[in-house]
Image (tube, rainbow over all chains, first blue to last red; front, side, top):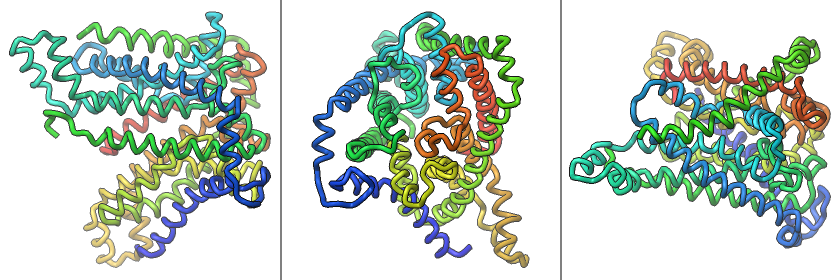
Length: 258
Length: 244
């Protein structure tokens, strides 16, 4: 096959992928709140900094992401460690742990909503945190398992032979080796929680809106000038987080055979 | 280490297995079964299926040449191009969807069903390109040369050798795009307004009106069962064809 048309097509697809983002970012500096170019201003960026709705949504989003990341990291790491040994029903167990990744987010959201209604729990940031922990623990478990698989277990066993208790052997040998995996799992969980819309939308309380929910409610009616600035800031924040997680994932497995 | 099994299992049983059972019980209630037997339900499911299928097909057509080109590049370019393909995926879905409005509006497509299809293709492109790339990259060059040496035109080599050999990548990519496209919710709301209602939108509508909606539960159950069936197919493909 000829390379030049293929290269042109690839360039075109990449341009189509990035053009909307570029146009939106450019419009965020336009003085006009409508879809027109007029002047150049940082006003919209100044406005989002002082906007109350944005501030409270941001703090809700951060609390939600922080709480669910901590819970999911503990549960997900535990889930990955438990799956190291062979036991009866392991296949069922690994399927259960990976299930939240597989079902569409709207299904998980509706199922949890049905549970909360059935037991009479009123929706709040805490019910959303339960929902976020449920999908995040699955992602953390996947990332930590990958790290564990690249690790040589003999060092932990050697530590035990040399007189360490199983807990000491884990804490001083295994844990430091998988720590980069745990951290990158936590970072992934934080990002997924921060970006989530569908699950939050169905499981959070009426007074605890998050940033993605705020964006949704505005963009449903075409969006506002502040939303352009806010979206541009969020894009840059995501790119920063990706850079960080790429760095973490490059840390080699200590003592591993890779 | 047995004790480690307990906390994650308990969490998932309480917050995943039991909730799913609650939804299933609601779907199999008399009202839920009535909704499942309703022609309108299946018409909506059919429409969602069609939108997801058209988007998947377009995604495949757009992605195949890209994946083919990337697979033929040197390692540096290859990594750079794959990075560019994946990067937007790591940003917020709503932000990306919002940004599409800035392009769809001047084109006169904003708030039309076509906007939904374009949005889905735009959004799920990485899911298609990556498995296609993995599959094309493994393609033995000798076979393509042999086909050409034996007198096949580039066109028939492509259709008779390249496409069949990369079928696992085509299947995997199609499943990975189709599943989330079928259950999508926010994207059509934002890009199509009321011009396109998919399963996800209908579930939202039903639950907003009635938090115990048996019809909503029925839709959710159908979505879950079809997704799990497709996921299972994908994992089978991955195992038998050694796909990444």
